[in-house]
View (cartoon, rainbow, N blue to C red):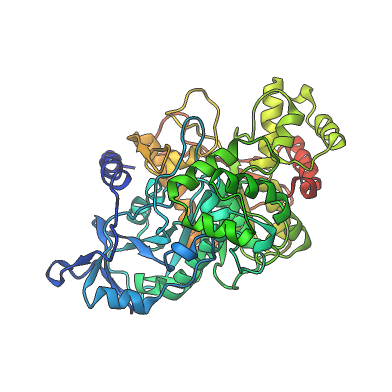
Length: 555
């Protein structure tokens, strides 16, 4: 990787920080560009609207904030998305070119912790960003990556994870990045929502499904092949990928999957979330009357009122206290591990992995840490965990607790999915082993790979983020990661278009091999530090035990 490209990456990072993160994006109504200013090469015609993109590199165009569904406003709050009314969009454009050069308002944020109360953003956020090579058109037939952001289903702004430099490195793919409803706006649950009369469960996940349908219908206009779509996400985005793999959704929406640090929190039944609904509606001043009365009140409440209510509900000491996906008995019919063990999942090639040291909880009380995430675990289960996670295998009690919660909540998806997917298809697994250089210590924490793959990003509260300039060595390593990922998107195999200096990534065979992703220890830009390793037997055995507890952990 050249020094010039490192400088360019830093400049792009600065531009995103100054423009994308702090810009409010679209205002109400449809932004219009006059025909005289619309250019030619950077305008895409979807058939119902023409969109002007932003030329972010000489070979890259970003089309930002394209609507993929009708705005979920008023009576549509807490309801499943409905397909975009393209006749309305066409009428509003009135023959003019629509400006798609700025990031849109992100979805209403939940609290990230500490003193953050969330609440920034807009409900009119069902948008998608599309990144494409300059000149791509309907005959290009390029493979497509659809990215689903993380953030615990609570927060996240896709402007913090830009893909311009991915296209710049490999101008033979199209990337789409999805905005979906978050926290209570996306995952308010109740057992009486089943029939869809008063509201729907899992609307934030259904937003993602609707976005995939929009991609299926429209990505060809941007040069993409709707029959060759890989879904990708990290943390809650990785959990979303797993849910799509097992969901009862329209077949053929994707043909490959990349799941990074899969969030494997409990997927409860709707009735287990009812106490959270009661607390939330009470906190919003909507705690009286019938359920229909409460929903009418919640729909009339301001965003700030609901933001405070979801923060208050989060802090109450009840089981299943967070807003996230549930078993809705329609699209998500059981927790994902049970579906995959039964063989009831999409038969697609898979990349799955985790960072070396990520954890699902801290402290020194193993039982308390596990029960906080998985309320169905009983004392006998905890005793078994304590036996399997013997203190003698760890450097400290804190390390023991961190590993146990990390393997249940994030890491063991690598072993479980890697082995189970071999029944029908190929899987490649990884251990990401490069610390985020802006964090203290040598531990490779959760989301460390995001810093490397997205121009040195650290996300903050309420949709903000800060990019840190990257060194030549870091850019060289990032280019290896992007090449593996996009090789998989292009061919279903991370090796086909990898960089020459990068080693072969052996798939997860009976020998349980995985790749270790790290930069060169000698700080070379021309030599790879990546290598293959055997999966440790003790780790594999622990993850087999975790899998045996999936019905109790509901993951």
